[in-house]
Image 1: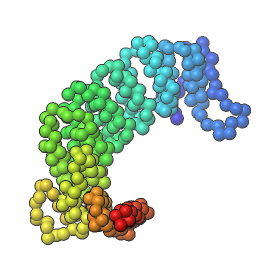
Image 2: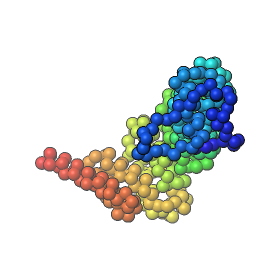
Image 3: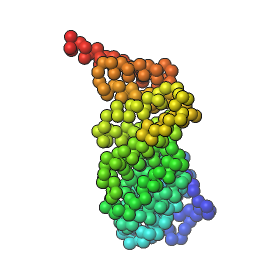
Length: 342
């Protein structure tokens, strides 16, 4: 838990804290599972409990809570009391944000640091610089949930500021260009294009729909086994209430071994798999089975069953039990329909 570059000075040894008696954490005489806190952490949290009991809000509280947070960035009580103290003493929030620039990168996976930053930006009302900060943070971990969640909150909360959205699609495309399998970036693309209102220039939704179909198909052709792109394709079709069958002709070549006789065919609407593609692609087989299942008649459902069987027995055996469940469910559904119509 210790995280200091300089030698730690115990609060008990600091003159400015002599007026306060630390409060130790209550434990039974023989605790069942005692936590082995460091001496430094016990020291800082002892004084933190004393400060809370006294209800003190002062500059030294910021020093104390920073010490606690650096040793335990998940200490939500320290974060909350720090926020209340910032407001009570009128501390400059831009200084606090600079500290958060360091702590958010150092503790990327801590929910509390991002929540604290959210509270600060709600007060400063300066969201645009945050986008640049998030971009730098994602350089260290391009798939960190908290970073992406914060970016989406920022865009949604300050939704009426068009400058916030100006380069967002380019930002996503840059990340997908670096890693086509970045599921977080695919999710963010859906958030930007479909789940956040209509941006200027995208009023023609049919044109946007066609653009996104071309984009996702091209990316699937580059990496046919990338489940993230297939999920985006599903999302685009479902959001626009378009039948999966509309893309069946595109999907089918990805469910079969590579056909070298078609390598010279150029089809922008339905780009074929690359010669190096690992085919058949499991996500494509799964997608095509869903196409048939959604058609709903007996013949189509049985076609889906055959595809699920191929996944269970050959192409995706690690999920064999799941595919066998889908097969049983479909066969029972067909039998039930036939019994009702008999």
